[in-house]
Length: 75
Image 1 (cartoon, rainbow, N blue to C red):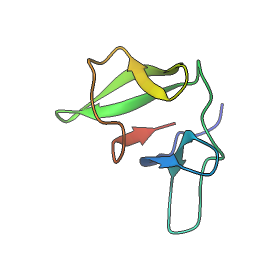
Image 2 (cartoon, rainbow, N blue to C red):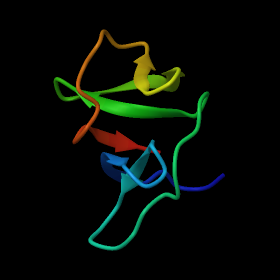
Image 3 (cartoon, helix red, strand yellow):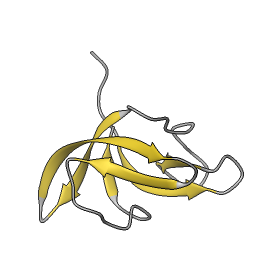
């Protein structure tokens, strides 16, 4: 079992998808529909799944509509 890593959710305009940034130049490699991870909400880790409402409305199943950019994640 691999260890989970903390990062920040960012939108990659080149790929038109979200990614997780771990450091200045270290990224997860892109998130696709159905990917599960956790998001920090009010000091607690909440399990979510990322989905796309085509063509460009990304959202997290398990959370009400929130701005995804900058969310702290654990993947």
